[in-house]
Image (tube, rainbow, N blue to C red; front, top):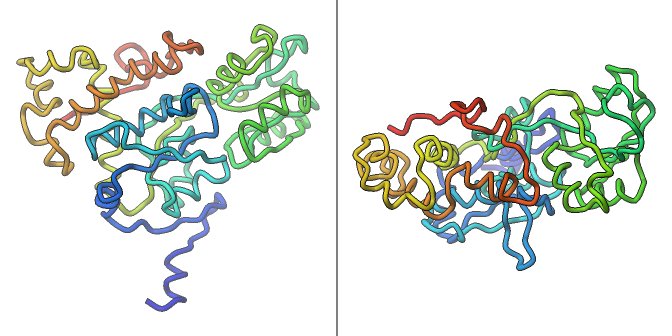
Length: 341
């Protein structure tokens, strides 16, 4: 291939301002196996979703989403490495091959999807919110006329803020930063009146960084829900399938009552659905090119979705977020298990 043709094939600039590169088709799984680990995009410290603990071990909902894929392909949740990325860096890092998968709090949008990314099922349903000092007495977006707002560049909140300002004639003043820590630090130091981000990230920020969490209020910015979803590059359907079904295994296990604690006992179940899911009846592993017990291994090492949610951001965590739309569909939420056959 000539250099001119190579560059033409290599670089496609999308409407979202990101660079789309064709993946080395159908080779991602083999590259991961040869390398011995999967490379996962991560935030720069979003506690509950992806952040290192005091020992440097990465933890969070997004972290365990990626660990599930590591288990499916390599059989070991610890064969996942995490690359901290800013908002502007994250999409380019995936498209250029710096990482294999991006599970880092990224909203599934049309332009991102159409410009080089394939999104898996959302691992968290969310809405944008504002964080403000309670003493301001502001409880809804329409009361924010003239407010200055700290936000991270390269995020969907830039569009949300501009839309809200125009829709309600608020003359909102964006103050942009290129990373999460700087954005949050600026807010708490008084550089702006409000902080806009995912409501869960704001809850984490309030719980872990506010001098007194009760002094701050969070309310919806637009009221529109978004799906935060892991993504991979276009061009490798096999890897895309594995990522999708690795997350689905977390949902299906919770739906069937299979937990990290009882998964071994469930191997004795006479339920054909459970037998197929746990690999006692072959076929699913072969379809994905994986070990037949790949789903069993995921639940044994990582747990089901409810367990992951509760330990990182739910009732067993310091953040204690309500599951809301992230409940199973049968419990009134949006998490719906697909069929494992």
